[in-house]
Length: 81
Image (cartoon, helix red, strand yellow):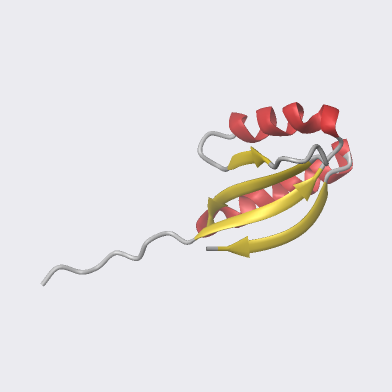
């Protein structure tokens, strides 16, 4: 009998950052290979939803905490699918 492997749980975090700093945020996240995928939300309000796997949440939290100090990032909400 074949064991079922648990699928990774996808989580997301909604952040707000000044519009001119969105590129920096995206670049920083993408430079941490495979950590997270950022998506800028429409509306021009500087909202970015960042997707990752539950197993990488701590690593993402640490990076976002550093970015809060560096670029004034606000973490608005965490969620999962």
